[in-house]
Image (cartoon, rainbow, N blue to C red; front, side, top):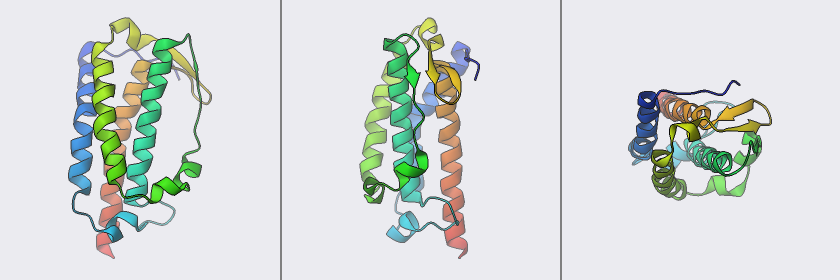
Length: 163
């Protein structure tokens, strides 16, 4: 993956998207029943609760990768086993545990991103699968994942309501 370099305007828009994401996610899942949260309505897909927990993990990984890039010279950014993590016991918890993580993590994450110089956004780590990744690459991925995950939750809920 070639290291991305965003314009300041695009970078700012992506940071603002991350700042809004906890509210958008909470609005989408507010008031859902346990059945809506924990039933995998689409075969071979995660339930809404599993997706919320997965997104919290994913965002924590993005945040930690950025911190590593900012504090080490081209650190190794390890792939994590998404499918394996879904099987762990904490994915059965109520989603409030992950919603709290989102709320607090995004405050810290956006504060960190707001403080970076243009040069710091271009610093890179070496991903074990994708190769060189800049802070801007991670910002792009995080922004894309926010949209993709909200759409996926909406599809799962629509599938459940169609049954």
